[in-house]
Length: 96
Image (cartoon, rainbow, N blue to C red; front, top):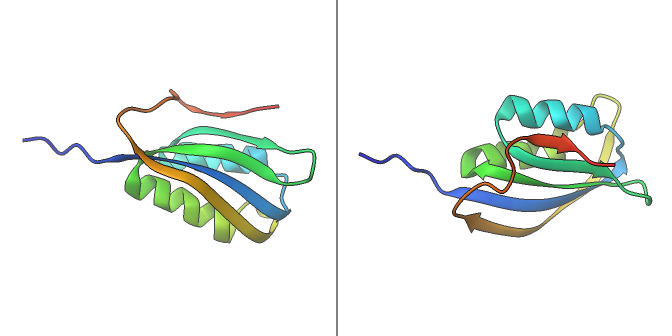
């Protein structure tokens, strides 16, 4: 009996006072999603999250409502959300 759940991929950009890549990295690993995060030159945080749909949804919620302890999230844009057949990353990483 297969219990394969659909895998999701979504790109994100978080606006506000947000430069907590380490917290995002830790949260992603705790939830169990893969992908990446990086700070942009315009003061936002951008990246991609992949994993089982419910875990991606948990990470989306964290990115849009919670964030790092010192952050102030004004808004989070999600784009390119799609179902994927396999994960493109083996872990979650910080890009520079």
